[in-house]
Length: 381
Image 1 (cartoon, rainbow, N blue to C red):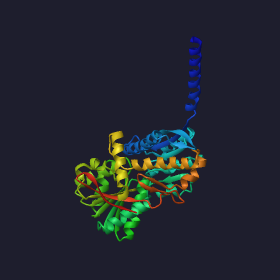
Image 2: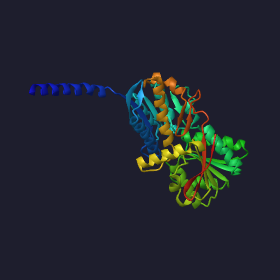
Image 3: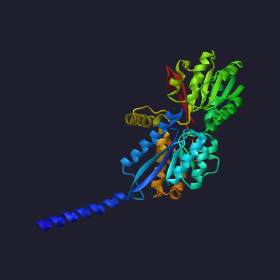
Image 4: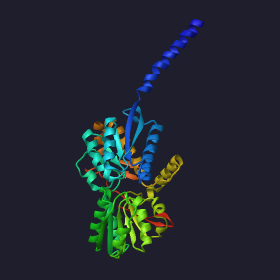
C-alpha cells in the first residue's frame, strides 16, 4: 500500500509538472501604449492609459483566443511627456521590446515623428486622439486613428463660430505645436470662407502661463471671438487673464481644451456659454447607453471620471485585438491587412478605416460650459 501511494504521488507530481509548461507556453501579446504621464497634460495621458488598461483587463477576463489558442494581453505603458524627442525614444523602446502593436500617442506632436519608427519596424499603430492630418498622410500603412482629424474638427468649429455664434472679427492664438497649428489653420480657413475676418494671429508655447502681452495686443483689435489652438493647461490661464483684462470675447478651441479639467483651470474666468469647443469623437443616441456604461465602469475601476479620450483608447485596443483574431495571429505582418479592413462596433460607435488609415465618417461633439461643467450641444459628422 505504501509503495502504491508513493507511485501515485510520483504520478501526480509528474502530471503537474507536465501541466506547468502548457501554462508557460500561453502566448503573451504585448500592446504598447504611449502618452504624457508627466507634464502639464498628464491628466489627459493618464485618462488614455486607463482606457487601454480597462481594455486589456476585459480581454484577459473573457479568455480571448487567437488562432484557437488562449492568449494573455500585456500592456507596456510609456511616458512621452508630450515631447517629440521623448516620444521617439519611447517608440524605439517599444520596437526593441518587440511589441505586437502600439496604441498612441496622445498628441500629434509626438504621434507624427514616432509613426515613422513604427512604420520602419512594421508595427501597427492606432492613435486614439492625434488629429493632425499629416499623421495619416505620410503614406505609412501602419498608421491608423479612431477619431476625426483637424480638417474636420477645425472646419466645423470655423463654420460654427461664424454661422451660429455670429462672430465677425476673430483673433487666433496657436501654441505652435503640430496639433495647435494644425487645428488653428483649419479653423482660420473655414472661418474666413464663412465670411469672418481674422483680425490678429498670435503665437505662444505649450508651457506658457502668462498671456498678458498677447491678450493686450488682441484687445486692441476688439475681436468677437478668440480661437485657441492648444491644450487646456494653457487655455485655462488664458481665459482667466482675459477676464482680468476686461476682454469679453467668446473663446473657441479644439479637443485639446475640450476637457472636464478646463473649468478648474479657468476658475472664475469662465462664464456660462463663453467657451465653445469640439471633441474629435462623439456618439449618437443609439450609442449613448454603451458610452454611459463604459463611463460607469471606468469610474468604478479608477475612481475618476473620463476626461476625454479613454473610450477611444479602449476601442483602439479592441479593434487591434479583433484584427488579430480575424487573422488568427498576433504577428504584425499577418494581422495588419485585417486591421486595414476592420469593421468593428465599439463603445464609441462603428469603426472602419479609409485608405489612409483615417476613421470613416468620424463624429465630432460640440460643447459649451455652463455652471462650471461641460454641456453637450450636438454631435455632427
